[in-house]
Amino acid sequence: MLEHAAVSPWPLSGQPLHQRDAAPWRRIPAWADLDEATFRDAGWQLRSSVRSLDGLAALVGALAPDGFLEDVRAGLAAAPMAMRITPHLLASVVWSNPWRDPIRRQFIPVGSELEADHPMGSLDSLEEERDAVLPGLVHRYPDKVLYLTLDVCPVYCRFCTRSYAVGADTQEVEKASLAGGRGRLDQVLAYLRAHPQVVDVVVSGGDTSMLPASGIREIGEALVRLPQIRRVRFASKLMSVLPQKVLSDQAWLDALTEVTRLGRERGCEVALHTHINHPAEITVHTLEAAKVLWQRGITVRNQSVLQRGVNDTPEVMSHLLRELASLHLRPYYVYTHDVVAGVEVLRTSLRTALEVEKAVRGSIAGFDMPVFVCDVVGGGGKRDAHSFEHYDERMGVAVFRSPVVDPERPFFYFDPLSSLSPEARSIWSDPERRGAMLQRILERAGMGVRQ
Ligand code: SF4
Image (cartoon, rainbow, N blue to C red; front, side, top):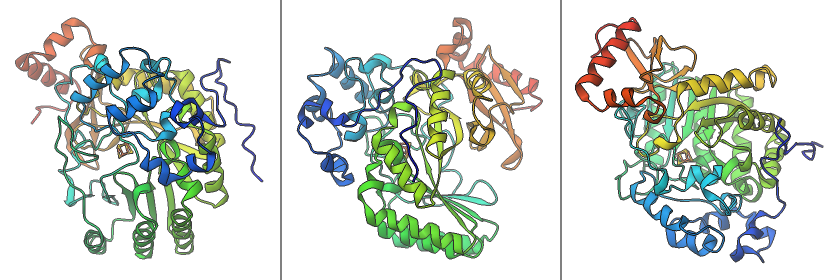
């Protein structure tokens, strides 16, 4: 029997980052008398998720400091993502100081944190819509496709790279639609049959925890039965935001388990790719869900997004990686935050990513050490953060090549303007000087004339 009691809640520095509470929901006055069976029910979690300022005020208004809710009102008015947060996460926020809390920072925008967008930012900085061969099917790498099955999630993350499509429309953004159902699956299967070089399918969204059990089974079985397919990954943030799905939705868990077993019989690896960014997201229910998945033989990998004020220090990242590894949620990637609109305050410089990576490498077994990557602007895909052709730290511009995607085209990562000097910011604010500056940087990178 696997025991998780030994998982340490303590970081290397010896200071507690997060005390794991057996009944965190009791911190919320309205849930003080709630029984555990209700809180661990995924249906209740979804029905009770908070989607409005009024809903938030009703639950935490008495706990949050003066001025916080007004700050949220201002944040929501400018946000590209609608707000949705599960009780599971809401109960883990330290409401006495929500401004500093790493969970609040990722899911609830506040006006006092607004930072002007980078001039090179956009809603779809990875240009997924450009590489879509069908609605919701992105084919960028030769052997892999990304199948976006739906556009809803149990929560809406401020840093979402798909804020162009995921979630409800906001005051700022009208979303692209990913609706479809069985007809779209048939189109995807026909595309895959016509492209036998594709052996790897990422089934994403939105979040695949929102697919019914029948959807997991139908999509999973159809994919693993295609003789060419060797890897299928279901992407879901459930281990952070809704681990109750694993604990209470037996039909969904059984569907994932059976697709995994069928895949193993047919030589196709099926895995769950999840997304935890901070140790405070790992609750007692996350521990329990990790144990269930491990015992069912389901491979789980974790992808994190490096975010300013959330996990951009060696101490927090090291603590996170050790906890993930202990739970067999294998650390896979740490992404620099995409240059998406509306969340500049969460982005770090590339330098920060390089320094955090350097500090934590060696603190954990190599196979549990994630690769730090930039999903580069313009759709070049994920590039090792160290693999830039040239990095001009004064102007905050890194130039990458992505030979498999396009050997001639430069791809970029841009540091947040707030990390630059006033002089560098003034160059960025002037379109003419900006163009000349980018041209010079491209020449230094050996990339010639920029189209
Ligand atoms: S769960 Fe994933 S797809 Fe949904 S909002 Fe968060 S990052 Fe985006």
